[in-house]
Length: 593
Image (cartoon, rainbow, N blue to C red; front, side, top):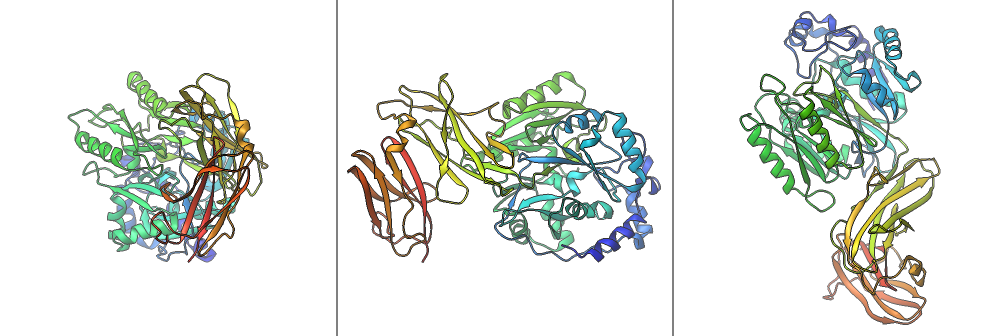
């Protein structure tokens, strides 16, 4: 974290500079938008001519930018996705958002309102007068420059110890020094560590799936080269160190002008679903957007499947400018979508969201300040739950044979509280919902359960639900039980009801970790056919240890660390899987050479 001295000096200098946007001569004439309460002209996304001229004339008022980088968080780092559990939303007063949106926000989360000391009284009065629940408002009283909390606000990660931390990038608007300090102040306010780095970036040009994949336009490379003298390799390395990004998809611009933020034309809705803007054929971005949509559909998501791409038509809102329906905000079970006043196109956009993100409460908001290159997402940023109960799961969607289907999940209570329950709820066809407990699978935070095959071929529906002693609950899909996963499941005589799970047990290998060999042990209540395989973490078979009839009682088998061809395997984590009594069990073993 930057030193307290640097913070104090920077804030004092900033307070004497542009505590209010109206202090910049000529801004009112250049501003496209005034705040909701008519207090000041709002700085737009881009740097204005008035700003540039003001700072050229007053360079002594700008605080010296700190070009040092803090050490990154302890590895492994994981950057949170927008759809993960949030307790708040970060906005700024004077407002660039309508009050009816704020009233809906406070039904679900706290409003963290950035406000300068000169506006606190007006903020309290106007928020209360417009029906905002003041018990759900927390003020961050600091000098600030603009409404673009998405662009300069904090990015949230969990470090290697499972603790939430804030990453503070250098905001790519150097003439807005107050905004650049907000993540540091916010980290102090909520009591989490903050790691700052000097590389230029902006939140509107960044999407992550929470599973080590991220996406931006090449603005990140261009500005890092110009302002930080960093090449693409260095940028990718920084994104890995500070954010845990292993696959950084950086795409070309869709047009020569504009702010080049990816959230003006694309949005991830979950780990494998992307919404991409569509426009009329004569618009200059028509062909590039079609190309980007095709490109995204060809990329592999963290689930191992290609992305599903939905298109939302963004009509001409005037002067050949498309609506910005992709500039929406996901906040827990809600999706807040900007609307632009054409009832037909607005309703069509909401329908696309409901089809692409079933189970979410999708609502639209019309506001005169929403423009083609900025809207709702740019002006609000979710605040992650420091003690979130996280569930991660790769859904089973493909057709399945007449065997039990293994469901695996990563479930981690970041609060430190113990799990009280973790289950898979499932049903065959229109039958009643049933429940199977998820059991620890060997790896930390890894759990597994088996859904039995139906008596006859039918669809199977399921979802995961988890609860911990802190009172938190979540699941997958994240909106369950409003929505669930579905796959076609073949039926047949191999099907065994869930009660048969007790007829077999798979134990942890010993020793573990091991080198060069280890012993696996499992028990059967009755003689039965059993299959014991060693798999790599991608599910590929490494060694068949048993495939045949086994007696009742305990069976032990030694693995010497070689594959089916007798070749020694590499160090790493392997999964060993038992199929017996019609069910499937798995654990992990670690080979260390």
